Amino acid sequence: MIEGISIYEILALTSILFFIGVYGFITRKNLISILISVELILNASVVNFVVINKYLYPDMLQGVYFSLFIIAVAAAETALAVSIIINLYRQISSVEVKDTETMKY
Image 1 (cartoon, rainbow, N blue to C red):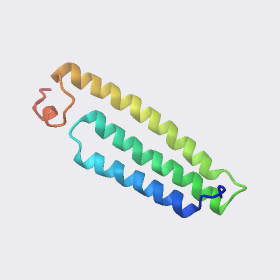
Image 2: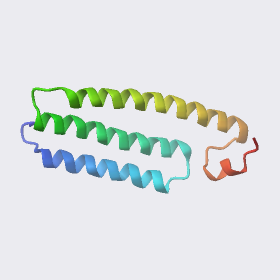
Image 3: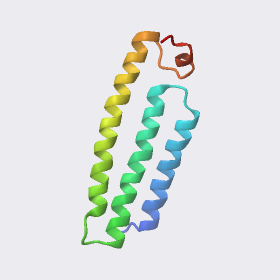
Image 4: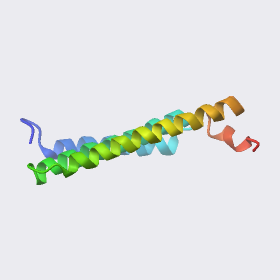
């Protein structure tokens, strides 16, 4: 693996990153903060794909391809979510989740 860092340390770090993202997704009331939490979850999965691929199959690149696909999907998801949040802000002048319930269609 990497000199001085074992796979267990990296997986522990990505698990912590994943659960910080889940906690933020569940507890946050701001749409931007929820989007950042989703990005943390996706980044933890990307690092896991690369690390597990490097550990199990060091000569193959499937984990890297999956990671690039996830990064591309995350970029598209972020662009779409930010555009939706901007439109919501223009309509109701707030990015809080509770204020979206009172929105008129």
